[in-house]
Length: 418
Image: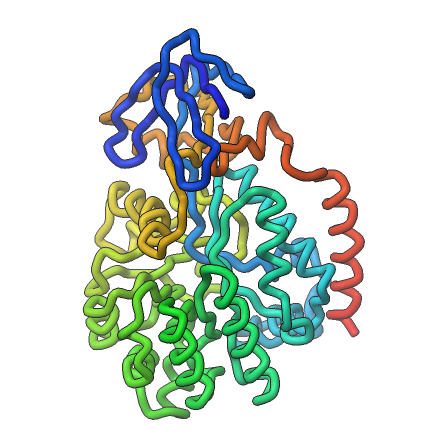
């Protein structure tokens, strides 16, 4: 167990503060309790002058992009979103091998830990190393100590044989672990594949995790190829009858589609940094409802930054305030709890927040959006275990992983340039 001495705990929803000694249980799904000053534990951390609050959950991540940072320029400079997919991400995912996937997962999990994120919902793609790829990611996350809810991105863009293999990978993984059935954007998924994916989700009583209307091309090609909007197509396939669906992005949904989202039990995952980078537009929540959470889309693992960008960009295009965006940040934890994941209140961060102004229950959100940064995270506790402390990952040898990942990244970049 871990004892956080002289801690000031900030409740993640009410922002009410409680000062005392927090004994953190290290059982999965457990919590913490305030205990007398004389209590001792295996690990003691003096939190005098520091704040403690709940860790974060990333609602939409991409492990497979971890080794992209600093990569060579693509063979053709993309002029639009379709070309970004073709010449960057679809080139990258085809070059991944088992070791690259392992190192991508390890470095992503370490980045999550450093940024106070103790759980990630991931959407993976590696068509030329497909079978067993999800288990490689799961084991890497387990090794670091970060929770996960994984899926494989089913698509027909590499042909019927690969689509069948990705359906099989999804089915086999879900027999062993809690997860989702992943789908790439509708315009790359043929009718037979879509219906089979939904059937797998029904069989495992789970949901789908799909990119929805991230760019207008998804709506345009879906209507041209299949005669329906993206959301109407999902409805006709029975996907909206599922529980726990995650719809990524959702920028270009029309009014009727937004009503379909609202009337289902699906969740929307917003990725503001990625949208800005890809120049695909801005998310608006009009007509969608309140089941909205935040992700990073593989851009980074910093949920504080993700929330701040969602607020700064969103207030220009959406009817929101700090409270709406902060609720979306915390909704990811609500989602995984509804999904049946044991993610207790023993997932915590300790903040060494050097504010020049008072922090109170009334002004905490002002501090969160205008003061707090990832550098303030001094310790990360996942399921009651200390996995990051004072700049160092504790669960694995970070130096070895980063040395290996640098070598793997260069091999990946060279393959992408061939």
